[in-house]
Length: 178
Ligand SMILES: CC(C)(COP(=O)(O)OP(=O)(O)OC[C@H]1O[C@@H](n2cnc3c(N)ncnc32)[C@H](O)[C@@H]1OP(=O)(O)O)[C@@H](O)C(=O)NCCC(=O)NCCS
Image (cartoon, helix red, strand yellow):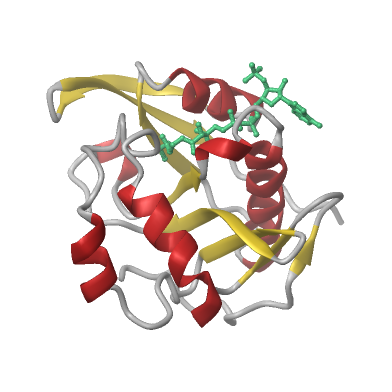
């Protein structure tokens, strides 16, 4: 997994008003399967993976890598926020940290994704000050486009890939206060 460099991982769990962001644990495996097998979650992400394949192939603790936050509500995983440097061919995104997010449909529309992503970006600003962050999403993914705008991402470019219009946004680095 392309990593974030020398960040120390896992961090202490990050507490927000309603949520905890933490590293994955074995008991999150069923929620990872729900997320990855959900047709709703993957409507704009190339489609879900078959549940039986996930049951067989997912590691005992899925999503255990630096930058992969499980979002926990009252002790249960409701989503994942991902910060990573994927290999990609869009010039504006090459080598940059990329933000991704996946939440279970039953918690959409409650502001949890915005709350969790804000906390994860705050963590990134502390451990890697000055890092720009990019975000790619389909323009048809209305909830994701609204979230990107709410988080302060602005459009860099639109392009066509995987049979859909894609949006690449960027969040300028936060200048550390002295
Ligand atoms: C993209 C995704 C994370 C957005 O989730 P979401 O729950 O709609 O996002 P937010 O956390 O921003 O919540 C938004 C809504 O909660 C509402 N809300 C309700 N209570 C709230 C509260 N206490 N605080 C803030 N917002 C609240 C807001 O008004 C907002 O409504 P709006 O979108 O109609 O304006 C979700 O749809 C998802 O997981 N999709 C599948 C995965 C995916 O496509 N990922 C994108 C590619 S990386």
